[in-house]
Structures are given as structure tokens and as C-alpha cells.
Length: 458
Image (tube, rainbow, N blue to C red; front, side):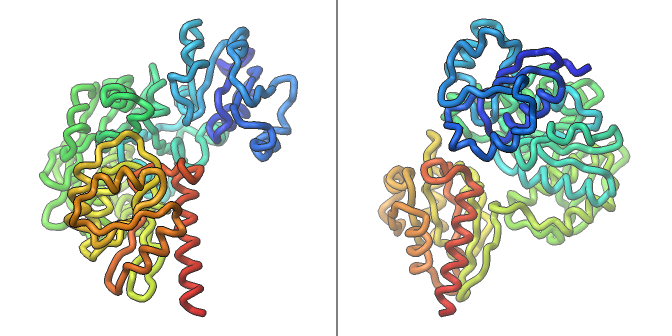
């Protein structure tokens, strides 16, 4: 019998994670109440997707989050976008009601070994690449968590012979207790989501939960090149493995003579040349090294690891080449929702850059971004709520144009680009001033570039 059987569960937020948990919990025998501030009309598609579940076991409270929801509540679950300082969550804690989310409930039940991956940047690419390596080994591999389909939706299909590769955000990890993946990585730690976590200390605390509950026989993978990641080594309870593009490491992946090497207790051996990876930029070299170390830690054969490196094309909206038009490359890096990610994108190109930057701010520091833009960028096109903030950061020597919308930004970028340039959408801010998420923003950029191509052909 599932631990949720007979429980009264309240789910705060009908995002994909909360919706998946609602279905799982009802089918496990819980009585579920889902609450969301949005209206039934706005949530029509989601409500229809759950319409087959029994109405006496699933009810909705929409447009408000009344405290009365907690009167007969055994457990409060948060969707990924719900802050832990929201009034209903604070009241639940005051009443001693336990908090959970879909990733915790999945981790408590999965029969398959889990590779858990977090970090301020690169976790989606690394997760997808490790998943590709798992697929190349002909092992049933499930990829999800903070990306793609919530893993709890497929829990009933998994077996102990499978492999799970789970991306975990700080939002998901901040609630974790008593469980950590047996193989876990913190790729890097830089300021991010400080609008949510309020301080770096809280942000680091959340990230640390991926290691905090590991067992002595588990494996932690950290970056030898990132001080924030390496500092987490004090939390490691089992085997520590490292990855580095700057130095050789005894246990983990590194670069030697332009080849990727893998070391362990038996020694080191080369796997393939660095240039065999199709990913763009030095930050992606680190993602590949992390993936190599994680895949090897999970027992994926070296042949499958190499095949994964060679055939992995990357993840949409992450330095994604949309197309080349009139000698200008148009690159979609909509995932760059923090200045550090935008800096990594700037470092990926030697060509002159027309940078499209903007969106919504997350109380981030922009000093280094402004210095690198002045050094590397030919022209900056600023858009969205963040535009005026970034304009104030730029020096007098950096040419820039400030606009309101993405469509205007693409038009101005195109007008300022010449053959041999790169038009790079790497916003640095979140998408929530105009879009539902970075995916929608990236898709709009793709569409605008395609429409521009069609116009040029007329």
C-alpha cells in the first residue's frame, strides 16, 4: 500500500509537476485538493487532462488560496514555481503540516538507480547528455525532473534494471529531506534565483540537499574548476569524483592533449577527442566532462559514453543555431536567464556579436556582464523590463539600442549585422515580463528569424 493511501493532500499550483502529482496521488488512494490562483477558464486544458479521475477524490479551489484548505490537510505539496514564503506555506509550517513535492515523492519510491544533477548553469544540457549516453548503452533510461515530463508520471513503468537521470532545481531541492540520489552532481554555484531564495546562503543550502542525505556508498561529482561546487566537497559522505578542463584529476574526467580522459582507482584512459563533441563553447566542455564522470559512476560502458558525446546535438534554446542568413548566424540561447549564462554564451564565439539582452531582472549583479559586453560585443539590443537597467550598466563606448519587444529587437539586430557576425539571443533575464517561460521566448525568436528569412526571399 502506498504511503499516500488515505491521506488528505493539498497541492499548491497546477503546473505540470503539480498536475502529475495529483494524478499519481489519486491513483495511490489519496484524497486530493488542487489550488491555483488562476481561473478554471485559464486552466481548462489541465482540468480536462484530469477529468477521468473520480470527482470524490479530486477537487479544485481556484482563484484563491484560503487557509481553510489546511484544516483537514495531512500533507501540502508545492509545484515548482511556488515559493516557500507564500502565505499558505508559512501557515502550513506554523501548523506543523509536512511539505513535499513531486520530485521528493518520486525519489522515495523509484525502484531504479538515480543520477541527480543540479547547478546554477548547464544542468539541462548535462542531464540530456547523460540520458543520451544511457540510451546508447541500450539501458532503459528515463530523463526528467526539472525538464520534460515529471518522472512520477512514469514511475509505474520503471524497474530496478532501468536508469533515471533527474535534473533538480533549487526550487525542488529546498524541500528535500531524508533522500538524495546515489549518484549526484553539483556542476557549479553562482548567484541565481536570489529573488526567490533571498540570499546566497539560502540558495546554497537548497543546492546542498542533493548531497546532504547521501549514504557512505554513494558518489558525489563536483567541479574542480568552480569554487562554489568544490566547496561542497565538505558535505560528501561517500566517494568524491571531480571533473576539470584546467587540471588532471585522479578520479573523474579531465582534458589531456586535446582528448577527454577518465580516471579512477585503476588509472586513467583516453576516451575521445574534445572536438568530437558537437556542443559549442568552453562551458559545454565542462558539461561533457561532468556527463562522462556521472555516466561512468552509474556503470554506463565507455563505448556508450563516447557514442553519446559524438551524437548529442544539444538541447533546444541553449546556444541553438537557428540558421545562417546572408552570412549572419542567428543563435538562440533563451535559456540564459542569469548574467553568468549570458557570459558563457559570449565566450563561445570568436565572431563579432550582435547581442539581444533583456527580459525581467532577478536582482542579479551585472558588472562583469557589462565589462565583457564592452569588450566582446559589436552592438547590444536591449528589450523588455530589464532593458533600462542594462542600459544603465553599459559604458559610453558600447553601442546599444533599446526597444520594447522581441520583434523589434530581432529587426534592429538584423539591421546592425553584417556577414560574419553572430546575432545572439542570450537575454540574461527571465522571460516572465512577456512570456510564460524561456521556451516560449526561444520559440518566438525562432519564428521571427524564419519569417525574416521568408521576407528576404520575396
